[in-house]
Every structure is written in structure tokens, then in C-alpha cells.
Picture 1 (spheres, rainbow, N blue to C red):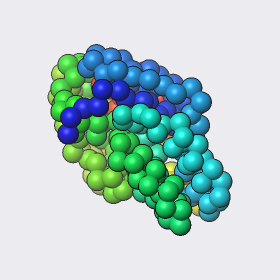
Picture 2: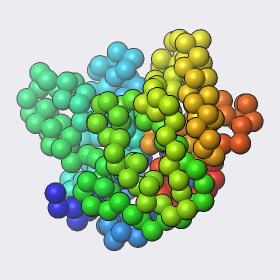
Picture 3: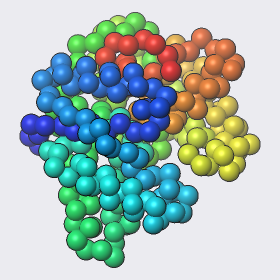
Length: 247
């Protein structure tokens, strides 16, 4: 696949609200690779929260707005597996009974990429010339790993960071318990799942845990901070840009 000349950045709600440094890190990385960027200022939520809560009409409204805003882009890149999964798969479901809109949704889906996927599979880059001293373990978020089948790309990028050693935790692909509204509806189950995830991170011996979905990272960071564990939590973009500030 030839890299498009122009990339539009889609920054999810959680990144925009809680971790804007992740968006800045993406910009630094892409500019270093010579990628031409734009950031549509009128972008809003992709509609995933409404969709997951069963509000299909509201989700269609958000999806239509997303399509209107990003339709002219050569490619759309987002630092969130769950948001990309929403655009690629659920937009097609939302407009299944509206052929014209589904055609537009399919065109958007075909050019929407998760951050690490775009770097490795489209730009064909696995070494960004970054340095980070430490032992890093990687958390596979559910939508990224099982919805988009992306797990090789993040690991390739980590392995090529100078000074960084990738140490796999047990059951790296086990859910952290966030799941959006799941953690609100079932807090006891969510907390138990999170405790298992954090324990596996600690047992791995890593001093840093990295992931590609902000929901998971905020969830994991919350328990790590409450337990005052000496483990940094970083989004992949932060690691690859050389940022060491924990979420």
C-alpha cells in the first residue's frame, strides 16, 4: 500500500480531554516521517459511547458528522483501536438500510487506520529512532487485538526502541476491565479484572506498561497510582516520541 499524501488526525474524546500529550506525540512522530498532516477542528466523538449504550439514532448522527468532516481526507489516523473499530465495522451496521450512506461509510472505513497500524503497514517503518531506557510490557486492548487483529505492529515498534526491552506479561490480551460502560454497570467485576491485569504487569518485572487505547490506560493507571506502584503508564505514541511522562 502506498502511503497517502495527506493524513487527517482523528483524536478521540479521552485523548483530547485527559491526555492531549498523546496527540502532540503523534504529530511529532509523523512530522519526523515527513507526513503532511491536518487536524479538522470541528471533529467530535465518533459515536461509540452512544452505540454501545444502544442509542442507535444518536450514534448515526455522530457517524454522519464524522463522515462529513473526514470524507475528503486521503487517510485518517487515530490513536485508539476502539474508535477505529467503531468506524470500520459499526458504521456499516448503522447505515445498513441506507445504501448511499453505507457506501460513504465503507469508503471512510477503508481509509481509517489505527496509529501503529499506519506506521508499520502503510509507512513501512518499524524503527523510529527513539530511545527509552527500561523494561516495557504491552497490554493488548480488546478492540485492537480482536476487533482489528492488531498485535504484531505495536510489538515491532517497541522492540526497535533503543534501550528498551520488551517483557511480555502473562495473558497480555486479557481485558483490563474497562470496556467503557461495562466498568460502570459492573464495577465489582471490572475491579477484579483490573486487579488481575495490574498484578500481571507487576509480575512481569516491567517498569513501564504501554498500550494503544486511552480507556485501558486510564483504567490501569488509576489502580497503579492508588497502589503507588513504581510502574509508568504510557500510550504508544508517548513511548515512540521519547516522552517519559506517565499518564
